[in-house]
Length: 391
Image (cartoon, rainbow, N blue to C red; front, side, top):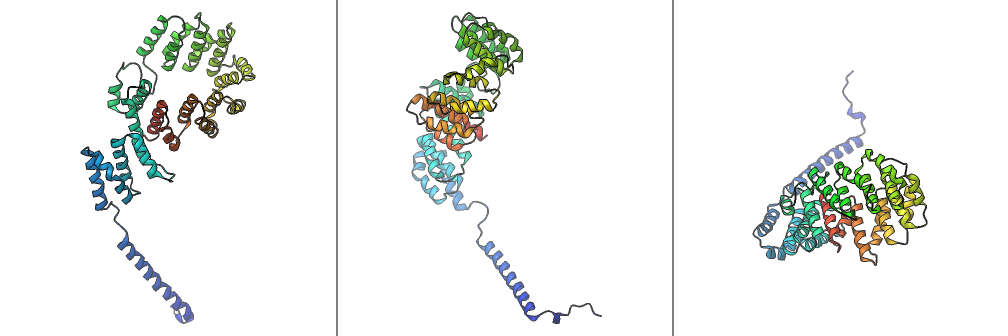
């Protein structure tokens, strides 16, 4: 018997329908492909668009900033989604009106978009840092701006910073031995209160500073003893526990508290009763002090303590509490700091702006708002944060 298919057994209607589908699908596919090949643009930028961009880069290269600024908006209107056009707009704005004008232009372009252009925002941030690095009215902001640029690999900023190359400025690690020894000698030569010298030694981050600080634990001034204890806790050397424990019996309460906090930070709980007693105080400032010292081991009781402080009537208490809780409850911290940024007290507003930068992990919107603040240090730190996020 033949194995050929007997087409007579297939209903005629089905054969016709199948043929129709095959023909039509072939026609549609052929038509679609033909339409695509006829209408899709080439993958590269069109010659017209490239020529328009080149024209503006030429104007910038020739220093014809005014001419570029007058007509660059036309380029943006023709190519609203082209980030090269946005980059040109920002470069022209920086050259013609500075970083504030560039940020204005960027935010107008951004409009209601929720996705930032980090590379463009980075350029604006560097312009802010250059501006701060050139001014001479605020030396602290100038130094921080130059350090931020140095961390970003800027050779010119390193040259402008100058100073002693052994002081550790601009480095992410601890200061060098020469800088530590120099600071130690300055502290030893000082008389009376030595809080500034002690703080500078602690800020070096170098364990070598411990030897000079241990000597201060025997100082006649209780303020110096307390500050030296805190500094040793920051250096993080477990071997300093043995020299800190005797301070738990110091006649001055401030020294006992600072020693207890330093020990707790080093993992020694022998001073914990002092801190827990402070945490139960009726005074919010005392509870905040305890929370600050207990922050190295943030259990649920600690979090409850800090959350309560974040709603204290005193704005300065709320400010410090927000900074403490930020790593554990960033939403609460941002809410508190955002409210404080509108406080009637200018000093609180400035500190809140700094706090928002410190607690912002990757929120470019927060950083852009901080670039507009009146606090020069906050602007510099916001720009520095943008650079860190976009490296």
